[in-house]
Image (tube, rainbow, N blue to C red; front, side):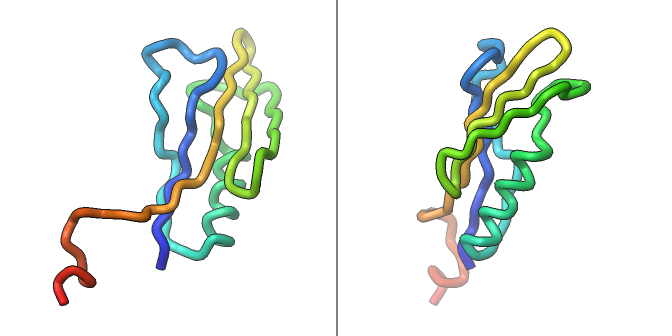
Length: 97
């Protein structure tokens, strides 16, 4: 079964110290399962805001969204996307046979 992560990549309004992409979900499942997990993450992601006053979601593709979060004092933008694991150098069940 494929392995996936959902990434939140800061684009707008985020301080330099917070500019790194972060994994917000990790799962195993079909492409449809992963796309559903991405959509759930897009609707729930709040960065560090205590209260999101407004959420704007822009669809780039089935596996990528741009999310704009409006707080009381600031607005932040994140690219939320799926990434499928295509290589892992750690030994696994397939490597042992």
